[in-house]
Length: 105
Image 1 (cartoon, rainbow, N blue to C red):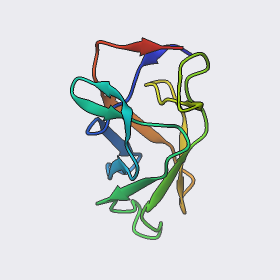
Image 2 (image 1 turned 30 degrees about the vertical axis):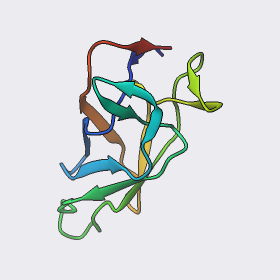
Image 3 (image 1 turned 180 degrees about the horizontal axis):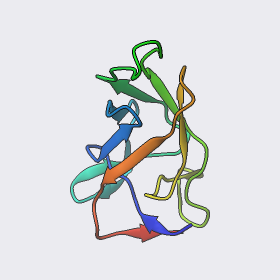
């Protein structure tokens, strides 16, 4: 699906409002002065409260979908419509705020 590309520093949250960040940014493609993010790179989640309390907090996330036609180093880039799953909870990540200049499919 088309959407704006996700850059390092974009606001991406888990379902419990924990902040997710790419561990390995992709400096080959710059977006608004920030590195882009590859679908294959791991993400860490910080500050997840694990609501309700019996649920463990989100720690890592893996992206399941990315761009189809646009790649960098042969790897798909992340777009706002990309889907991810957090471990150990199995909840998705929500890209909230990204750059709004570059779109991809």
